[in-house]
Image 1 (cartoon, one colour):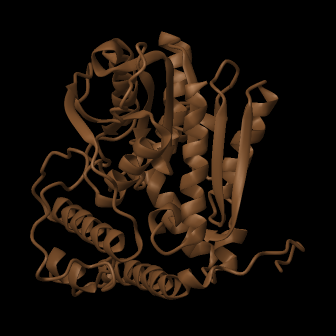
Image 2: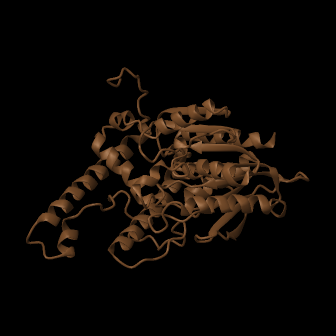
Length: 386
């Protein structure tokens, strides 16, 4: 029970070892940051190499790619290679994240079924072109008007992830198969190489393309929705605002999983991290680093396309299904956004999964709550058939 009297369901035992490793990683990272700052003040440091040796921020051993892992063929959304220590560090971090994702899918995830896919490149004015992978359900008796379509955005704190990540690809395949919808997965550009609003503009361009190409893709343009996870849910919510303000395409649904919709941090629920034994200052440090990576200017956090929850009006947006997790500080964002949508007259529901964490959907092979999560997302997507 927390100091406010809220009663918590015990964390599912599945997460106990993962939580131990994660806490150690966060503490080591924070300690390394302090050492780096002290090293920078040390008058006898001999230059960048000396300071680097004192610095932290290394990937924990549990997440580091094994030595026998071949270089990944798909490291996520397209990011321009940049020489220099920061770029090399980001590349190592992304490679480690991809290796971790591959191992987790193998150990505790569920592989996706064989699904026909097509690859497309969408031009984006003023920003890099964006790749879109369409997963086709190919029903035995396809309707004449086409199947429903969903524009989907992966998670990864705006700085890792991609449509080629094994767990992302598997989830898309399973949802296409079980919901009978086509999923158009957007491989948006990652920060900090491509900061806000690049990904938002790519998302909107992909939405416009999906409507324009719907007939060719076998998709019913009157039954299209958007979906996203974490940072991807931010983009999904943002694109509904951009669409309302610019294109007014007939979006039918938005499915937002563990969304971050306020980059000012004003709606974070840090009781969740405190209940996991993670100190407030460490949790805030990690969460604020997401916004610093994504935004070129901290003041952009108050712009509605960066923080959809802060939009002056949410009227006219599509119905929303929001899924949150009890042990996730972003649950506050999801709750607040659902309430704000309702106040604006939008049909919105918010479901909180008790006893689980932010990354629950990945663990469908081992965690009953993850399988139920999948079933609830599929049920939401099936609403597009109505």
